[in-house]
Image: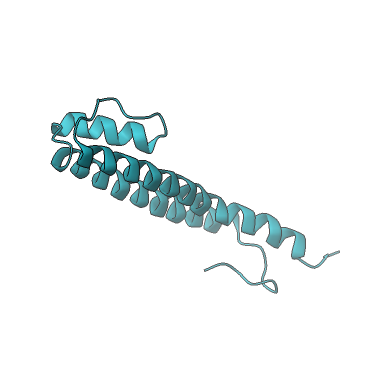
Length: 114
């Protein structure tokens, strides 16, 4: 997917397309994680759909839960989902920044042209 050391630097337009693809991948991962949280809060914690969406969104964005959970199952789900959300956040940032880091490193490895 990325150009090799011997290849030229990717043109800006192609780089923008690559960034859009990687942003889409990150967005899909975040949307999937949000869906898992919404369904989990609704089924396991017994919250309504809107409250489930609010709680999942707040936990996924690292702001913390909104509603008080009363059952042990809901508390276990919330703690596992919080850990999962942290991994999703770090992974999505890594996916978005990978093309940028590759472009910078590739730029420094290009042979000097005079």
